[in-house]
Image 1 (cartoon, rainbow, N blue to C red):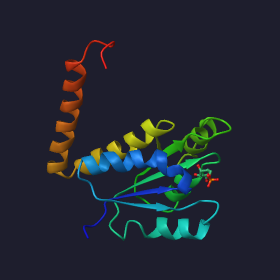
Image 2 (tube, helix red, strand yellow):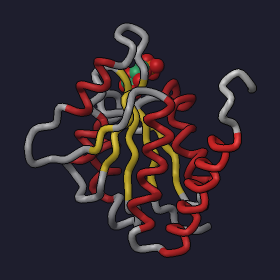
Image 3 (spheres, protein in one colour):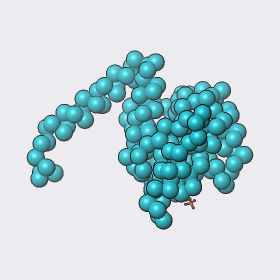
Length: 164
Ligand code: RP5
């Protein structure tokens, strides 16, 4: 099994329909990743152990998705020097504003990179993780350049908004 470079973790199984978007883009770009439910509130000891050991296991970037009182990315960041990208999952009660503010409003000295609420945020977290890894991986950098060019060409090739 190849060594995963990115860990995608989330507070609950119910976050997977959002977080699978991070997995999708990493797969597309050929980045090895692992996926696991690690909850700040329901499995706090597991979260601390996961965060403390991630760098030693060879993980380079952690993506953490959570909704509501979304303490997961911040708590992970408190126990690792690895870059942590936080994805605010769209909550039922407050549409993800609670998740967004919980993740974004970190105290000075412990950094979390906060993405957009929901599926776009999860997808971009995967893309951002790949871009971080690409700073030291020229082959991955080329695949990201190709991905961006294809995206641009696809928009330019379909300028009429009335045509599907
Ligand atoms: C958070 O609570 C999870 O990240 C999830 O977004 C939210 C609801 O969890 P479930 O009640 O669906 O398991 O911890």
